[in-house]
Image 1 (cartoon, rainbow, N blue to C red):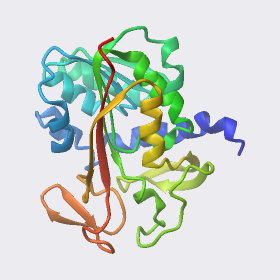
Image 2: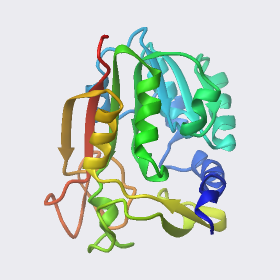
Image 3: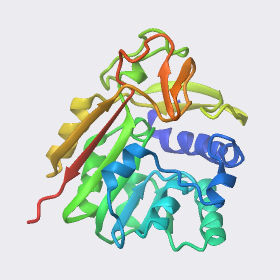
Image 4: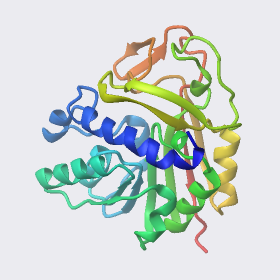
Length: 267
């Protein structure tokens, strides 16, 4: 596959994932419709009081987090490049009576579709590995933030993406040296896709993440690392307490998540 085709290739996978994920136990759409929030303690702590705040949610999948933010009183815009996901998001938006504005767009093309500034830009869990260029990513984030606005980010630690398919030993480079191509038949929810497909992935180091944000004009105000995942989304995880999963091969010896807050200067 030609790397220039990565968007179409990855979009095809995420269209299949949207269909499979919508009815999965992992996403628990029924629980959400009955009032359950899809946000975890990590991001809730970072977000704080978001009543009447404007929030841009990047790579929102089919909108459960976006709609959860709206339930907390925020004015939310959700973006995803999967047309199937955005279709499901709009269905949930109508069912729940929220007023989230969902846009189908890849991150880099978003300025062609949205001209608005936000108090908060938000993204979480399994997002940046689908993007080849974090400098462009950070520039988009900075572009959409109001002066004094915050970028709030929770993501799987790059160490996790160095591990092999069984998540037991190191296999891949920590650094963004090239596009990685994987074949997928089952997603992280355990659901089987309609068709087996390949997709592109990029590993990004913490240095690359942080420096991209700094170069874009943001300042880092908080950075944290965590030894657990709030999701049972990788092989060989064990639940050590409610909502906290560790790798059986590593226990709490490795970082599994990181989070950060970056701020745009007032002037």
